[in-house]
Amino acid sequence: MEALAILIVLFTVLFVRWLNQQKTPWIQKILNWFPAILFAYVIPALVTHSTGWDLSQVALHQISKEWIIPLAIVSVMSALSFKQLKIIGSKPILLFMAGSLAIATLPVLLVWVARFINPHTTEVFFEQHYWQGLVPIVGGWIGGSTSQLVLKELAGTPESMFLSVLVIDNILVNIWTILMFQLIQRSDQFNKWFNIRDTMPDFIPDKVDASREAWPAITLTLGLVVILAVLSKWLIPSFLGKVITLSLLGLALGNFIKKWNHSLVLKLGGVLIITIMAILGLKLNFSGLSLPWLFVIIVICWLILHYIIMIMVARVLKVHMAWVPIASMANLGGISTAPAVTSAYNEEWMPHAILLAILSMVSGTAWGMLTIFLFGLF
Image (tube, rainbow, N blue to C red; front, side):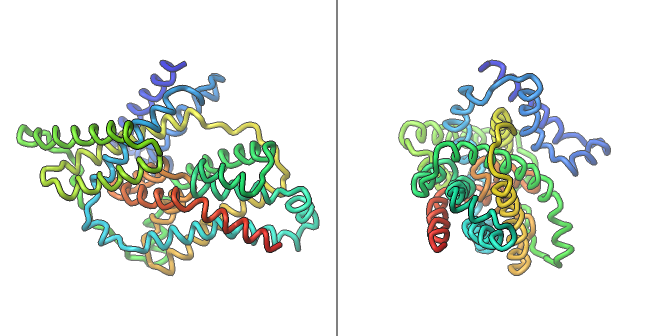
């Protein structure tokens, strides 16, 4: 099964890279609706679903977490310049924080409103204690699996309920990821509708210089990227610690080493992100849901309102509408999917998506504790 998983991922990466290079009009029309990188997510899922193969536990997932993601973080973050950070400013962070606040408070507000619409709401969420199932979702969406497990304990979520919550969380985040790939493609249209003129200059050349004079810089760049990833594997046991450390070191390399090849690391980061998405696709699963219909409706409304609120905040801040799906995926998808969605619009924005995803990882538990406090007011 290990060899099979590797072959599926390898085929998917090569196919996505091939798609990205196609200029045929009918292929371009398809990619306008279904970005090439989204095939990296869907192809492995289609293969496993159609064949019945279970590739959710293969070693490739651990390899991705321990090696491929750290390499991707160093690569992408070292493509970011301080000039870019200055131009982007604080508005995307404010938008991201608004999204986090919406995720933490909306479940409480929706349950409160639902009590006046459906008399069974009180029975489901308070007598049957299904509010305890909403709290781990906050942690899973904002902070990831660690925050989810911590908040499960803090809220006292029963094991049987928690397993069902994991399923609905997986289903909705997968669907949401696909939607965000679609919506980020429409960002320019949203900008026109809302009369937003926020732009970002092109900092990095699209092509990698492979001339003889460029090889010393290429060797230096690739060597340091690999060395940092290897050292982080042995010296930093915490995944969050790796992410933060490698992000800072990558940022330093890209700004303080004059011969750093920014085009190369951006291309490398893009390929690694595609690889990570393909490996994630091996886990895609939409089966096994068992929760009250009222619970499911609340969670779906929660997601949709989260996006609407972020659209409204972006409109007020006059920030580029591409930041809405980027910030949303930084909240819900995290360190892997946020830069992937971003690359469907502009690869140069991937480092900013990683920065927002880091903020998500470190703040998830705190937002979940706010949700517990608010439910406690009932």
